[in-house]
Amino acid sequence: MSLLHDVKSIKGGPVSFAFDQGGFITAQGMISNSPVSFDKVSYVKEMENNLLSVSQVCDKRHKVLFDEQQCYIMRKDYKVPENMILMTEPRCPIWRTSHYVKAAAGHQAFVSKATEQESMLWHKRMGHLSFRKMNHLVHNLLVEGVNVKGFHAPDGCVPCKKGKQSKRPHKVKKHHSIDTPLEMLHMDLFGPVN
Image 1: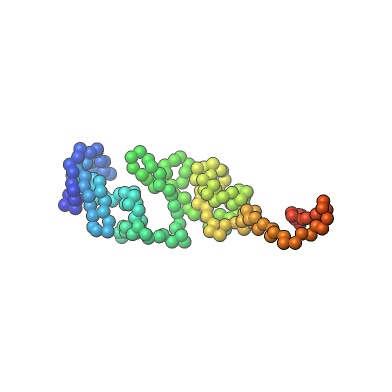
Image 2: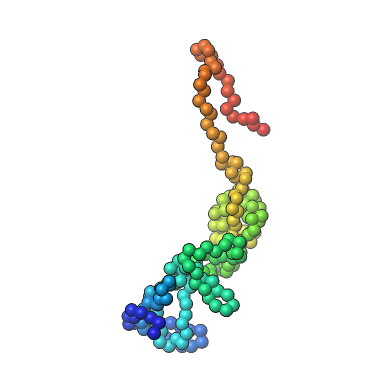
């Protein structure tokens, strides 16, 4: 209670603990250490330890990192290097709280990231489908036979780029090549075609 500021007494809901009877939320306040501050922090008299809500920290746009010794809360502008990410799982709202682990039957808890080579291979197998659509299909279990992975390829697919590129328009002719009226002009605007 000594850590909280602007404390308001409330009659909150029950909170259950792992091995105890639990308790009730009796107050809410704000906690701050200058760079980081959180509001609506709940106080439960029966709880002996302070608990940190990772989703509430992330709602403030901070990054959270855990190791075997402690938990780190990073600045809002900290960027996680792409090559350091091994597995991801999007946050999904469940009931009143938000979790990062899906509980759907037959779905893996975390999604491992595919390598660039695997991503390109599945991109070709799926008929050059966009990576966003590939991830949508795999994450929602709409395709069978694909290990659940996050697909990505920073450079994109060369055949896809070539298929979407367009030629620059022809320059306007300064001199007419037709001398007499109604003379036929043959032009090759398309080709050569195999």
